[in-house]
Amino acid sequence: MKSILIVFLGLFCLSSEVFSMGLFRPRQISKPAEPAPSEPDEDNSREPGSQAPIEPTSPTYNISFLEDATLFEEVPNFIGAEVDSQFSTEELLKERSFTGEHFVDQCQSSLVGRTRFADRISFYVDQHMFNVRPYLSHLAPYYSVPNKMDDHIQTGLAHFPLCHSTRSSLSSMVKKVPSNDVIEMLNEFEDKVNDLREKTIGGDEIAKVDLVKTWSKFMGCLSYVESLTTADASSSERVANKYAPSNYRKPAGVKFYEDPYQSSASKLNIGLYQFTPNWTGNIGACLKHWNQLYPSCQVNEKSNQGELIKMFGSSFQGMNSFCGVNKVAQTFAIQVNTSQTKSTHPSNRTSKGLKDKDQRCVSPFIYAGYGYNHFGPLQNSTGSNLKKLMTCTLR
Image 1: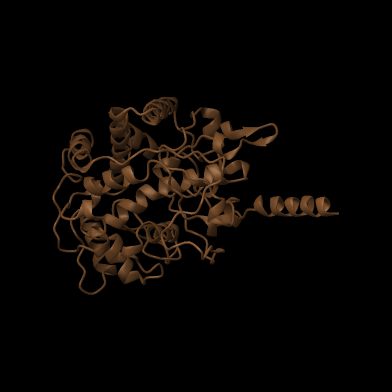
Image 2 (image 1 turned 30 degrees about the vertical axis):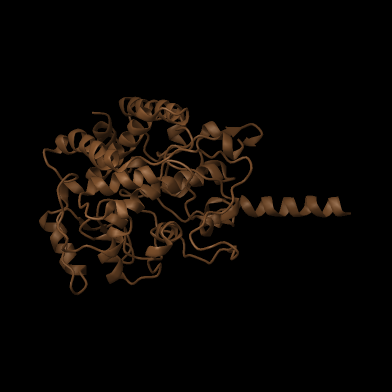
């Protein structure tokens, strides 16, 4: 009788886990909204900000962060030479004004006094490489991930290998399959990241620096494709003036944009990675993870629009950079923790179902409704923005 009850309970949990809802619809610029948050079950025995224990099968890596001298000199200089130079400007390496600074910009001692966007991007890329557990349990019903964070295995930008993109795989991952030359660029990026990842795990310190450089360049290029080319255009100033709270003025390099494809609740997009200042939207998971990682620098997860504009529209773009990198880690976490076939790459599918979580690969190139992807270029939403991103990343 006891064994029958265990089997019954197991089947019940499985049926709950594979349930999902199709909340998202395709559109030209994809900024998926997060489902209305609900409070997940919590393990109140843990200290605030501490990490939950991982499953025995979850891989974990003893890889240290980069030294500050490397992270704030060598990596940003590389970004400037490789990204800023392509656009004949210095948006990533420009020293920014303290006017418009938000307290989240100075939460980490290593970042105090560092004002360049490249500093923030490099720092959070390094922090998101391995052993990360993005806060996604409240999305369980929509992406078939476990309800409790304790049951999510860790991930990160390089924690799992990148999947190999093909025309066939992309046809089930994105809405607009790119041309063959773009697919070749995706393969070049995937191969490079995977090679550096293997060497880093093997203890190669030079490869570790190159791995951070490669992902930082990717995120730097993404910031240009998302916002930096038009951040200070008259249209950006006009939108900022429309929404600006009292005692706030749009800092240089921070784009304000009204998305015509969104509802009034989510049409405003701000900053490097174009986030909507609405806590019920897709910044919710990011704010929750921030509070877990930085318990001494807590933010109000339900801040009003005015406060979120100041936070995501700050002069140093601290929270915007964190959430931009965190968003990529989030979609990787969905792909390794889901029990839903469409929410992961075809390489993770077998005739018997999905591969074990610790045996999967991940891909940045997945549709919002499948893998909770925030970025339009990573979904080839316009049919040309993925090419722009990868051309910049590989040039």
